[in-house]
View 1 (tube, rainbow over the protein chains, first blue to last red):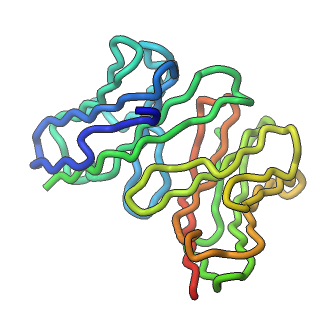
View 2 (cartoon, rainbow over the protein chains, first blue to last red; view 1 turned 90 degrees about the vertical axis):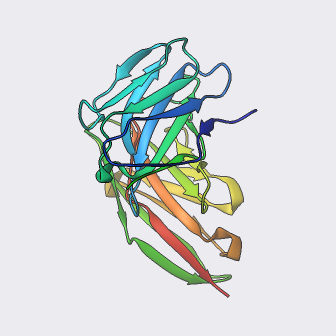
Amino acid sequence: GAGVSQTPSNKVTEKGKYVELRCDPISGHTALYWYRQSLGQGPEFLIYFQGTGAADDSGLPNDRFFAVRPEGSVSTLKIQRTERGDSAVYLCASSTGLAASTDTQYFGPGTRLTVL
Amino acid sequence: AQSVTQLGSHVSVSEGALVLLRCNYSSSVPPYLFWYVQYPNQGLQLLLKYTSAATLVKGINGFEAEFKKSETSFHLTKPSAHMSDAAEYFCAVSVRGNDMRFGAGTRLTVKP
């Protein structure tokens, strides 16, 4: 497809379980971002990849959260020992990663995570 | 670190009335500024962005925003609201292009 896709669209899990959220960026985009959006809030930055490497992971809230992008395309956000406070919509975005003045982030529809 | 503040979590206007959504930014260096719109159960869509080329930026769907350095503001306006404009609007700021930070959002309601 032409846009950023995220799977699953909805994920319900129990407290303490492990979850994986997937993001497929726009083809050719080297930069990939993960955000978390809690109810009534704006997107909160989690992590940014340039190619395969995490260029900025300062937004990850704790060591239960981890993300990978092994081939520089698809990325997976992994959450261990989920807690009810992890419930949110997880957004992925991608961009060309080129000059800041021209770069634009394109967002996927998000994955709604509910931890019971 | 850069940040934005959106004044008013909810704004309600009548169809055909002026839309004004307020955003103030904080940045130690010249920023890039963005407005995104989010319709229910959809991803964020870019409305417009400021990259220092012109202080008045025109975007999609008839929206525009003016960068005012003296007021550290980047308010979003539309002369005449449509019912289809009802959505959540987010202001965002970046200094390097890869460090975008969002405001809390403003929910726009359009009354018939």
